[in-house]
Image (tube, rainbow, N blue to C red; front, side, top):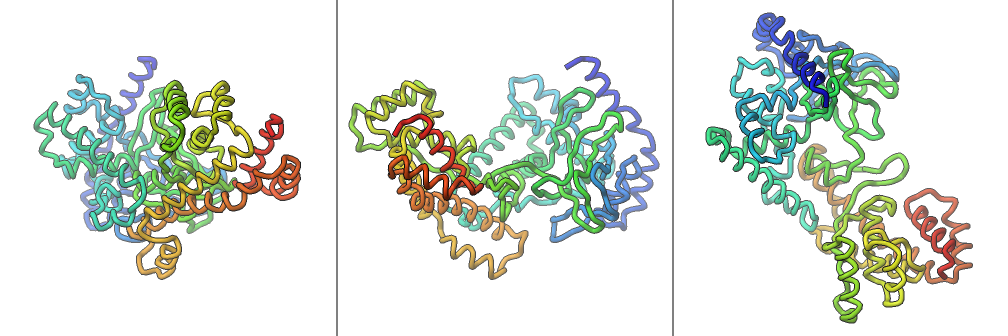
Length: 479
């Protein structure tokens, strides 16, 4: 990164920071009687933001969204938030505690420095330039699983996300303890407050580039846009405009909610990092990124010699754990790796001797139709075991959801969306074993005919798997 770019970035950040400051503070004093969204909007507009065609709506306590007051066409700029209204990583690094952290061997994520600015600047109270923004932030983050009670966590029983929640809380505490060790005065912020800041930043920061400098920033108002796929807007930092911009990618009607896309993610990432799960997480192409963690291991009743060979093969490939996240799409990287491990797990000695010469253990292509049939059967068995780990059946979940006993934005409903997503992955593989495993045991000419008639015309995830596996194996003349 050029030093000139860094200098320009710093100058832009600080330039005119004090311009109209007195006027803005006077405006804010006059806004005491206004509600939080209005104060936020007026503060931003007083500092040059373009928000006149937007409004903030509240759906439930601490649940808000942005709506269009006018029509947007594709290519229209939806909003502009000036640089001076952004909180950047560089601002956090410039704080007293930020400087101390930079001087130690601390592999801190960018989030840490945003947190440092947020926590220390909020102490100023009414004297902070960002006070209207801070007032718009949720007071609590009870929707985030790291803050759920033990009773609420029971709703996630059986899911690997419980391990991730424990790991996330431990990682936050490690960072907190290290910062307090560097600066004991930081203990004035409780671990709970530190955790709050961590999740605020985790769920709201934008990764942007300002005049050639890659950074991350908290962007007032823009962080109120809710998630929707496929994306309807795009965002960036516009150097020429001097601010963070959001642009419409399609037409947005008056009154419609204006959405952002948080990306193509499994629901475990949505729930852990944003505090919600998507009821139907299916993409336009039919793929669903939801995953379920399944424990994979070699068969203990295998011959000791073959077990040892497979173990050595795994270690030579740099693999010491085969536990895998499976989605319903065989082309997803995690699922592709898991299928590779399964081909090794179920391989006979002759199959093993053939595959070990071809590729690392994490990238084994289909070995044979017979092997692939055993792969699908074993995967279905693992999925069945996983389904028994949950506290309820999917039929019970669907009935509870249909009863509308719990509000849409409640933790109970979001837990249902999440856990049902995992169960559907398991059920998918149970059905795959029923439909596909017998097919792969047929003679090659029968398989070819069935694939041509039944699967090639379709474009669902199951058909794509059958098409790809059969095309590969038939072309290899392995049967």
